[in-house]
Image (cartoon, rainbow, N blue to C red; front, side, top):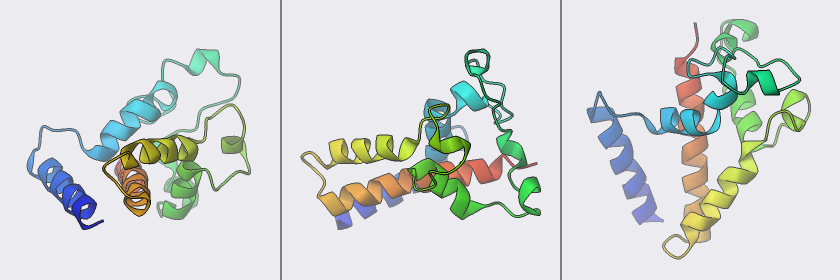
Length: 136
């Protein structure tokens, strides 16, 4: 576990020192969210025309929550524990299972199960932090 924590700290430090590099959260967003929510999070991604529901503007999450970014709700939406509402339908895949599968792949053979769990949580937290930075 200490090796994983060291690797995550090194990754975060590298991302922080390079102004040109994409953050881990931005990379997660571009790979998992931008197709629907758009690169800026306003709900204008290229998949919008293929979906039947409306796509939320992720830049307005704080505004819709009294000016406070809803960290717990966003995290629960991403990790799949918030099953009620529009994020529990087939309109939006719940990414928690995807991250868990990635964590299990990462656990083979280099990470122990608890290290894989830390890896998954780190990626979800990085994405949540990126979304907090998109707020208007």
